[in-house]
Image (cartoon, rainbow, N blue to C red; front, side, top):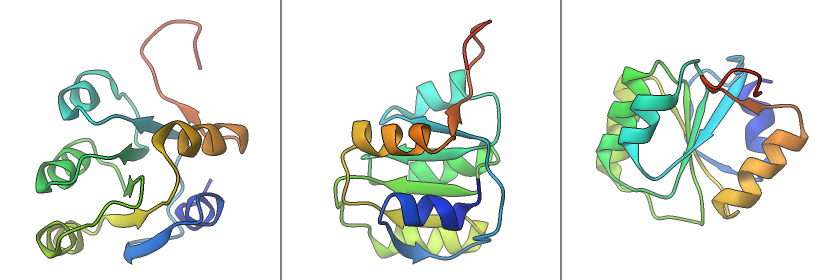
Length: 119
């Protein structure tokens, strides 16, 4: 799935436009960046309600191309400036995290996990 498809599925506003043609295969929904660092194994999209620059730094460390802020969160210029520097797409979706993850899953984007036998 391409990031532009994610934006369309989630009815998201594009707050920082990186490579909208980038292909992603997994998504992770979390407000705890330590969980993202510990459990995400593949490049993907980070969905979160946590609004601080650490989210962008975590996405960069995990080689993620896109961060989706859920629940109509207000995103500060410091976050958007950092995302622009790191070439990370930032989207803002009106959906709650559970709904956003479900929409992506039902459209073919699955979670990356290190648990054998799970997709």
